[in-house]
Image (cartoon, rainbow, N blue to C red):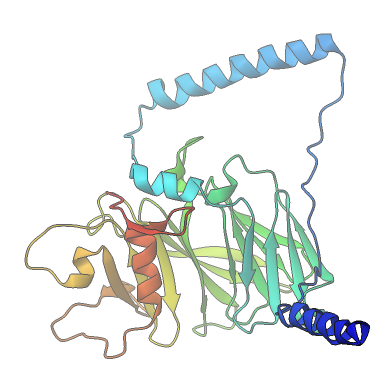
Length: 322
């Protein structure tokens, strides 16, 4: 009798254990860290290479900072710390939700949702970046092009097969100056001429915007369209810039300000700009006469990027970047 009573007790215990299992995790793919290729050579060659590199770097330093003496542009320390604490890799989903760009150390993998992003349909080779947290990737509006921005401000455009179509070099910049890194990388639909496939906006942390018309296919090329600067509104530079296609608004986030008589959004470092078809190309949305009735949810994300970040313990702390 005692033996017969022990059976349901064990079965009840196993049932309770099974009920504690909520879900199973399946690993679809795993990315091991890439191994860096070391240059071959004997000890003598390695020593001479180090000496040559030291002399070359010293000459570059003299040329950049003594001969030219450029005016330094210092980004807010809080912004530099925030971006530098991010992970090196990035996952960027296309607008249609069917393509995924996985930014790794020296390549960008393009995966499709047809097989739950398991297989690779394209692989873009990119150079190793000394500041990988400051890279940025953007899909075109029709999900046929992928733009990749390095921490130096150089932009590379790829197709879905991973072929590099062209490289857009920054207008200026100095080694190690993160203000030339890209804070906003946006593709716009371009219908003014059949010669060009899309418009690409490249905005660095200084607040300098450059627009490029890109063409793919037989007439594969690019051409600078116009330039614009947010420096009058953001003297300390910007933190991020995103685009809302439904309202044709460019949303820019920067440092907070204690200036009196401005809107709440402006005091938080947020501004919205209408994208125009001609000069001056961008018009700021203000409270009087040019108000947006529906404020997109991306403004909340923009504010989070401007003035907040989360600690490792998961507690929200508000810290002013400026």
